[in-house]
Length: 549
Ligand code: HEM
Ligand SMILES: [Cu+2]
Image (cartoon, rainbow, N blue to C red; front, side, top):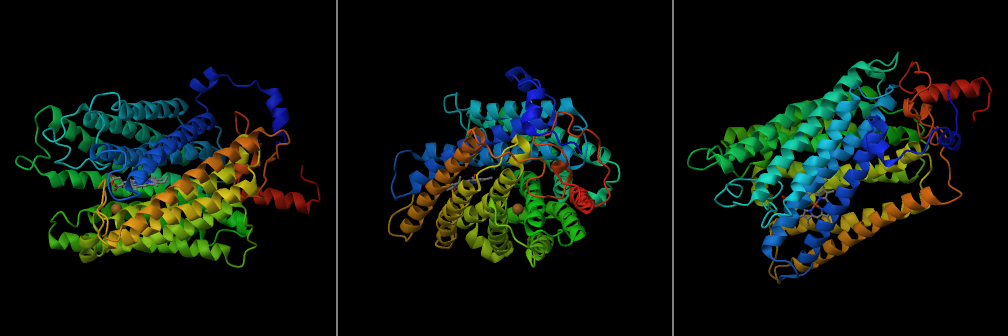
């Protein structure tokens, strides 16, 4: 296997200029562009969250009015879901999938670049509504009618919101076509589907979900645009049915939760075995449960609509299907726990974030089962309980998984190790800040504090919990600054700690090439004989007594 070190390789290739980045069709560069852009949107969405939390720190209006509040939290939700979480995972997938399957690039490199640039275009369209007077949509991230009907919200902001989302949908559909084709057709010799790394599996299932779910949202948005601008009445209470929007929206947006969470589950499934020094427990069970989640994910959407007056029988169906989907998730949980049991755990930063993921996602999953119980949901619906639940899933799950992945793969992507000491500070501050922010929201929800309100009266027992949540959110922000400092510090210091090809003694093919990989990924396409080809090579080398450089 090639063992050119990073500095030598850097000397061989020229430093890439800005034009090189703007015109690139290399999946690795596109992956990095995706990740950097999505991280910027995470910062922007995070700033909006801080504004929301500052407003709610104390009872009474603080520094923004109700309308500004509505815009801010709406754009926070939209940004975090559509411009941060989904594209960030597409970025990691873009970078890693070809490497993990031993391919030289994605199947359609130009389409890949087009997906990325459409994502920018869609993001700018959504944010362009800031430039228009009264422009920014304030419909929540769900755009429910009647609020989104023209007579209640005649601004062009709601149109830009919908158009931007349609563009983003086109981008992720193209990305999904690319992933499916790449994974099904371009695997290294010997890598049948059952020797494919779990992360690649999760990206495959995620891509199928995108292909099925996204057209539903795009169609619904087009109908909403027609209602607003062409005088149709699909979602009008007199001529059409506002609840139809809810069905179409959640037919996309419930699967979207798994679109955001499955690849994060893939990330932790890569890290757990490597940092437990054991093979993953029950590989096939993990893959089958991924497929099951992908399929069942389409049968639960109306659990978001228990208060919209569905027929009782339908409600019962959706309550049941929601509880059933907890089963494959539980299967995974046990697989992960058994992977750690009896292993030699290495508690480095990637592993800490992975364990954080397991705990936080478990809490989010359990609070979700609470909401599946219809009579209970009548009480919890549209309270802060839901805000707590969704952040335990999307922050505790996706974001913790992402940070685990960053600490694990940045050495591969850039060639240097991140400081583990600073990483641990980052982890603990995030962990404490996260729980301080979102755990009290469960209690606020049970006490009846409604979500999406810009204020609350004193004396209802809300004050202390809200203040705690605001303090926690600033801890998260501080932790994120520490992460950025870590990347800069570890990357810019003179005595950088070089990663080498395989710093973690890992299993999967991305560790078989140099860090960072050359343009063509692999000098020779590796031949795969098991689930852990890099470990096989390492063991063979050890047996033959040769020293590994
Ligand atoms: C950086 C830390 C974060 C903080 C402090 C935070 C805070 C909040 C708060 C307080 C709300 C409720 C606003 C309201 O109901 O009036 C909210 C809503 C929301 N957040 Fe976050 N959030 C954070 C990160 C995230 C992340 C990472 C995601 C997704 C990946 C996310 C997705 C959402 C969504 C979808 C909503 C619902 C918006 C709506 O109801 O329309 N948040 N956030
Ligand atoms: Cu759902």
